[in-house]
Image (cartoon, rainbow, N blue to C red; front, side):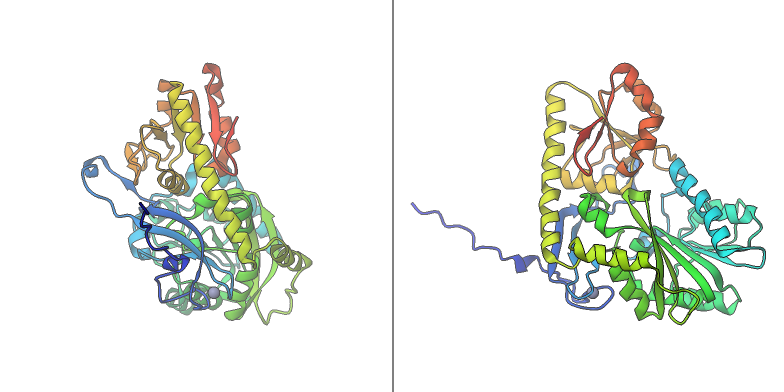
Length: 426
Ligand SMILES: [Zn+2]
């Protein structure tokens, strides 16, 4: 008897159904980078009273544009839904706070900022960074869409404009005389649904001769270090230097300097000025980084295809470890409840049968449940009570910090596990 096979499903069936095309250049998106299955919004949580309710899952697929090489996911949910009550508070990571303090010292010196300068931070969160400018009596303003985190900043005396940033907000602030000598945007570019409106706003609000610094996880590291779990619905885009050069040029600006920084698994800090600002020549570092991205394949579809294979392998290895640990009667818990943890757990299909619970220092996340996986989130003390054999570090970018904080688990023979870039027990 011959078995009638299903008609072959062609790769084109997974072509982008989104007719709007690339978020920057409008080119139709035809190249799937990775398919992470169905996923709920990663930066939300399930409360106890909602445990009997359904959750919305969306296809989580990243595409790359073959004209400008922007890597992006589809927008299923608008920024309003995501960010109006955001649970991410910058101040719950010690290493991030240190990073912010060091940045303020460095940039104040480099740009000679003083009481006559004006600093604007986009996505100023809970004021983790601007408080250092307030302490130096350098006038500043935060722009933050999430009212609940903005409130925390305001209570510390930091001026905050609660709104989404874009051309409209920039025009209003500029009309109020709030142009920025220094504008900064740390780890928010990925969250921007309308990239052209956001960068267009930056152009309007940056003072003549002003400097914009932008920090973002470097696409080159996401690809080469297998950091696929940074892909989630709330992260619309994943950036290289060469693509952002095109984006800023389109809006009359130029990237004139770049630095590599260790945050978030390897980020870039770019320095941007107005295109016509002759006092800011493009440095050799920019030319070198652009060439490195080309040499390492960020303008080659084969690079993205190889990445997709590594992602599958990571899932299989993590599942093998967790299942084997269970079979041996070991107890495994998580540490942290970051958005990337939800991508990982949902993509791998990990539930409470493989991971008892996770913990988080942020009280807003404690005693709730992770989206999709419904794994409970407890305060960190739960680890001391249970004394697990393994602690799976979900925010692997904070690995060193967490291993230090939890070094006492060694006393009962506990070990740490990370899944990215590769499964490692340490
Ligand atoms: Zn494009």
